[in-house]
Length: 515
Image (cartoon, rainbow, N blue to C red; front, side):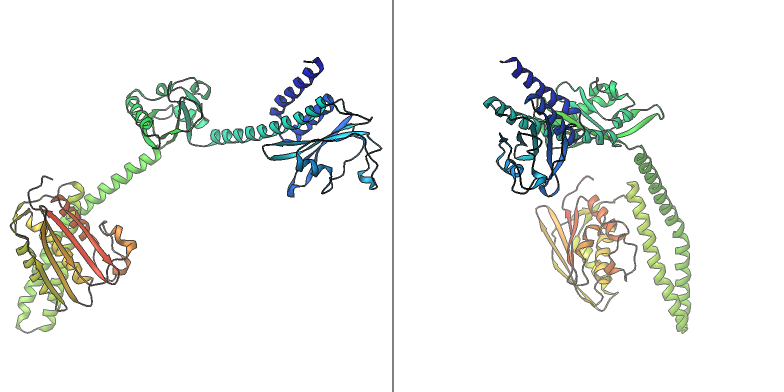
C-alpha cells in the first residue's frame, strides 16, 4: 500500500478513536471535517447536522473559512446528497445569481460527503478547495469512507453516552446492584450501593467472588437458589440474609436474583439488594402490637364475663318480679336481658378470636348426626322470626366426627346471618347431601347478597360490607366459622349476587381427620 494512503487511513482510524472522548455530535463531526481537509489536501471545510424538523444546522466550520455558509436550500445539493447518500463532487464551481450562495469567489471545487449509517442520516461534511481539483477513484472512495466512519463514530458515541448514563444511574441508585458470572461466580459489576451495603470498597469488591462476600452460614442456601435459577431461567428468587456492618451488629438484607440475557457465555446473574432493617423492625413491632392486642382482647373478654353474668342475673330477677303486672318494668327487664345476651355473644366471639390466634381453639370430637343438629338449630331460630321460613332438604346418613358445640356455632352463625341479611323475610333453605366421603351442607337465603368487590374479604376479621352496615355486629362470625371448619378438616365457601341472596356451603369429612 502507498505510504500516503496508509497514513490517511491511519489518520481516519485515529480520529475515530479520539472521537470517543468527545462530548457531542458537533465535536465529532468537526473533528472528522478537519481530518477530511487533511487527507484530501483541502483548504477549509464545514459541516451540517440534521436539526429540528429535519433542517440542516451549521455544526462546524474551519477557523480559516472565508465566509459564513448560508442554510442549505430545500431541494438543493445538500438535500440531494442526503437523499442519495452518495458524495457530490463539484469539479468547477459555477457562479450563482443569489449572492448568498455564490461561493465561486472563495473556491474552485468542493465535495459534499453524506454522514449516514444504517438508514440514520446525521448530516453532511463539505470540504473546499481554493484551486481547481479533480478527484481520482481512490479519493472518491476515501470520501465515502470518511462519511461512513464519521457516522459510525457518532453512533458509537451515542451508545457509549447511553451506556455511561445508565451506569451512572446504577451507581447513583440507593439499591445495591451486583452482576456476577454464572460459572466462576466472580463479580463483574457492583455499584456504590452494593459496596456500601456489603461494607467493602467498590474496587476491592470487583476482584472477589460472590460467595466470598456473603456470610458463611448463608452460602449453601444461596447456592441452592442459583442452581434453581439455572434450571428455571425465567424465575426471580428472593434471598434474605444478615450482613455484617461497621455501624450495627448486622444489616437485614433482601436480594432479588435472576439470570439476565447476554450474548456471551457463561450467563450472568443479576442481584438487586436493599437494606430492610427498618422494615424488619417495623414487622417485629407490628407483631408485638398484635400479640398485645390479642392479649388485651383475651383478658378483657374474661373480665367482662363476670359483670355480664351478674347483669343477666339481675335482669332475669326483675323479669320474674314484674310478672305481677308492671308492664314497663317487664319491658325494660326484657330489653336488658336481650342486650346482655348479645353482649355475651360478642365477648365469646372475642375469646374465640384470641384462642384462634394463640392456636388454642380446642375441639371435643364426638359422633354427630348432622340432620338432628341442623333440625334443632333451625327450630330454635324459627322461634325468633315470623317473617322467615326454614326448609330442610336432603339427608346425611350415619355420623360425622366433630365438636357438636363448635359446629352448632358455625351453622347458627350462618343461619342467623341469613335471617339478618334477609330483612324482607322469605325462605331459608338448608340442603344436606353426601358424596365421596364428605357431607355438604348448603344454606341459601334470598336477601341483600354480597357485592363482588367485598367477596374476597368476607372471611376477614372485623369485616362487614358497606351494604350491610345497617346490621350490627363485629364481623367476627364468619372468620371464626372458617377456622372451626378448617380445624375439622373441612372447607367453607359461598356464592352470592348482590340483591339475589347468598348460599354458604360447608363440607365436612365423614371420617376422623387429624388436624
